[in-house]
Length: 230
Image (cartoon, one colour):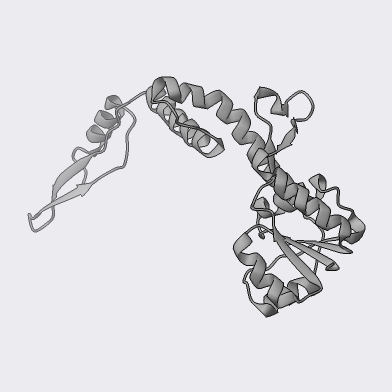
């Protein structure tokens, strides 16, 4: 049995990575996310610091069973999901669901499927970045909380099957705020004074004498003060 188990997201990458690492490594795919928020309004406990409740996806139970068996036999488990917050969350969920231990679990990342990149990742492991995991969880929780409230409105007002999450809801908020500004705006007049002036050669020059004046009285007073001026 191989001493090392490497878990990646994509099955297409697994065989190539396994070839680069050699016989001491077995590489398997988790096929992306293995669990998600459970269905229903109680998936997020808003009264308990927004604590989420997760469930393993039904189509991933066989994958989890295989990975659990392999992890128990391996001396070291390498979590090699993608280098973004989704990938970090996938590694964290694997760690939790497979019952892994910090003492023999390492997190590795790489940006290309080459022998040098893979071996460099193995040589420079790290731990799971909980900040990235929290960022992904916050995104997912916001999608659930906002989507569950807003999507039914879209179904009634626009058309069925539409969904709204954190991005769409913010865009709608910006539109609504702008519309309110427009509706609450009070229009008012202001004035600027332009004049046709003759120079000493009797040539007519057109010029703007002042910028904005707040009302008609101020404008007339300005004109009167200019009469007879040179």
